[in-house]
Length: 426
Image 1 (tube, rainbow, N blue to C red):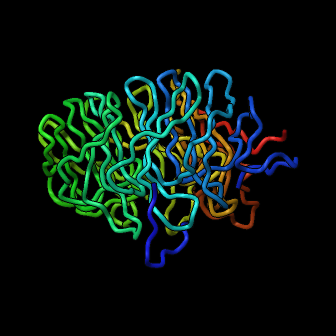
Image 2: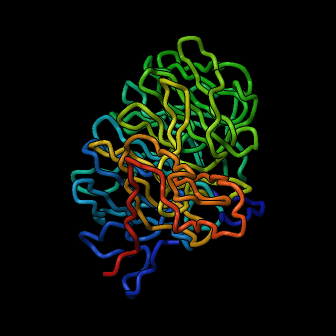
């Protein structure tokens, strides 16, 4: 079920290599293995990891239309396989892997330019099929959803058909397939990366000006620290990542203050603390906890730089940031998932040059990038790349040749980012 606004709403607004084949239409991929890239470019969707480590991409937008198609990534082979389609095409929706391994997809925007969905559906990995279940109590675009410790799914906020923030929440019980309204938060929340479940079972929602905590045992909300947190700012298009020690790292956002700051929430004291800022201000980026306990932050967007290819990691032990090898393709709004074995999958999204992306990158973590020095670059002069996404000022050239970017030695790197280009020829 979806509803339409009576007021006018504006339409919701590179691949690395374009396919030379005249394959199927974007939403009609061939069956079977479709190569290392997505079968179709995708943005505005959650990329969800299944219990067996595979990654599900369902719905989204290909730059032209809203999709119903779904596909699965197999980490062992690096291949995507087409699976059953959503019953309702949707973008800007939420999805959560349930305790029993199924995936719940909810809300979002429909195929039409305007509208909001209340419908919900379940994906069964064993059969590769989606089926509709009871709808939510209200339509939601860009809601935030988390799996609680008791197996229920909490869906919070989002926006209505007129893009007004919703201050409401509801619970889905997989055992009964039913929805139940729960206490409304004090503030509007939304966004795919804006909440985490803490070690003590509470759910932390960080968006807008006031972070809040939901207590499943009572169904009540409480404020999480002061208004605006340690940075004193509104956050949207940011990331919220739970660390191994139970603290929560929040990075970036759409205001200038948010974009250039990072802060930690300590559940033991319900307090926020500013930490060292990331090297690059960013919003609409991705973040994931790596196997060694660091947080990898990739891509995104900044007003003065456009879509970003830079990547960096936060070390909770030292509270410091270090640059790592850059992405092969600048992207914002891509999916970021840690794979079995420690690699990180970065998929989809879009950039300013090529639009919606089908390309996939796999990141192999290692130590941080070590910038090259002027001396190590054979007497380079002028301003030259340092091999880690930054620049070196090696002094005046005095009329001599200046080191060209492609001729400068890169800094030593122990990690790597490998691009799977797409769409592939079929």
